[in-house]
Image (cartoon, rainbow, N blue to C red; front, side):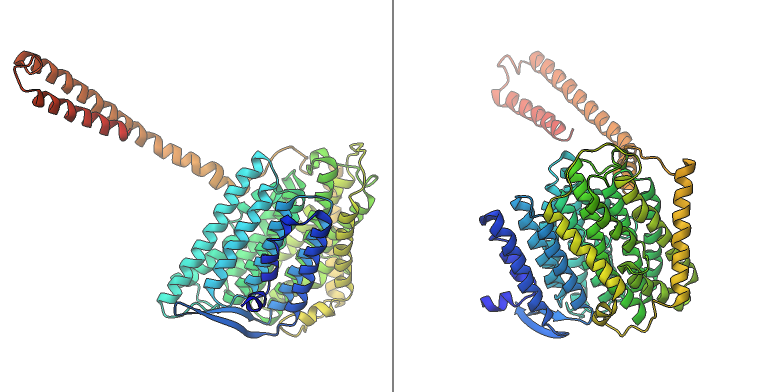
Amino acid sequence: MLDAIFAIPGMMLILGALVVPLLPPFVRNYYMLALIAFSGWTVWQIAPGLHMTANLAGIDLILVRAEAITKPFALVFHIAAALNVIYAMHEDVKITATAGLAYAGAAIAALFAGDFLTLFIYWELTAFTSVFLVLAGNTARSMGAAMRYLLMQVASGVILLAGAVLLWRDGAGFAITALDATTPAGFCVLLAFGIKAAFPFLNGWLQDAYPEASVTGTVVLSAFTTKLSIYMLALCFAGLTPLIWVGAVMTLFPVFFAVIENDLRRVLAFSLNNQLGFMVVGIGVGTELALNGTVAHAFAHIIYKSLLFMSMGAVLFRTGTAKASELGGLWKQMPLTAIFCIIGAVSISSFPLFSGFVTKSLTIGATAKEGYFLVWMALIFASAGVLEHSGIKIPYFAFFGHDRKFKVKEAPLNMLIAMGIAAALCVIIGIFPQPLYALLPYEVKYDVWETGHVLGELQLLLFAVLAFVFLIVRGLYPPEIDSTVLNTDWLLRRALPRVVKGLAMPVLALWFGAVAWAQKTILTIFRISEETSRQSGLVSGIASTGAAAGIFLAVFALMLLARLFM
């Protein structure tokens, strides 16, 4: 029985996390790394196909099933989990270590779930474990962000379960397979995935919660939830045309918010949303090249986005702030962190010889090949925007720009090791993409090194750099202002409460007016009945005591009801 449980990918991380709080820090870190390494080795052996089933109350469950796209996601999830452990070695925070390991395990187990009921369990477990990483921020803002985050994550799970039940009612069973989004069941599943993939108007939780987590918690959060949703979208909705336009919007709008945002970790959260858009476009296009692009981009994105969050986490750890308006000149005190940040920046910006170039190109090429010209233009514009806010803004305002005369130390050694490994992977994938391409579900038949493509990308990047320099020199670049950009979350956190209050106030005024009138009427009746009782002798004893008590209790009951409904 125990062997069967541990045969489920990710389960040894979930159960192993229970031991983490009992171990001393030195042992704890190497224990977690050993678990991750062994889990990764066992997962690497799993070939595509059905591997473990169970029957619960007559319902067939598929506990372990691997698809063609499962291995690359499982591999990069293990890499991210290991980097997270190394990055957090300097701290002794049991809750972060425990929650982070269980969170990674739940995400890995979800990749291999073959039915929606099994997926639902791990889907909600990722929500429950990851919320502790937001709470680890240990501020009033992080507490509020954690509650909103948990609400959205649990809502996603409930909607997913509703979709699964509708599928079962329609006779389709619970197996995870391609779905029709126009049916109620398919739409529920798509909506559940869309919440965790940060679709437009459903994305506020991401920018709200990730920057409020602890230094290490934000790095852990950046790797799993959204990419798990991308994986599930690819399994169930590949080729769904509306996703092309949804993804295009996702690539574009975060660019504008990221440019004016002051908190650099929030800038990266907007950038994460932007990068997810490229993946969603690839899923919507649905061709072999496009799906290869989605998987490859997700793989590279987890690494370079973690690297960027690590670098900003190191800055926050040493200076106590991640706000552009309070940073600058740190390259002198933190040169290695600055170098690693620049490598992450050029990777996300798709510079040739770095990972983003050899992965994002597949999706952009697939979009052009299928004739989606407007979407292709949107992706090109979004690529230039990524360079503006993540490729230039992040390293410029943190490490260069205004010299704030900080006197701080370089990041702790373990942080530098984690950043160094991630940076090395960004370079290795960028120069030697074939090992990654070999993991993709389909044979790669796209020449990313085609001369015209390389020159076109370099021209785009050059013009974006020149535009940034021009705006900075002319003083036209949005200034660093200590403020928070709510983006579409403004609708829920500002507009909706005002609308509800505006609609509710007249209704409440009528209600309280009616209650006041009822109370006044009851008291008037009470006084009249009292005067009548005195005149008729009820109170003086001529009438029965029972009649007087009955009148009193009736009036008292009316007053009590009126008070209850105020």
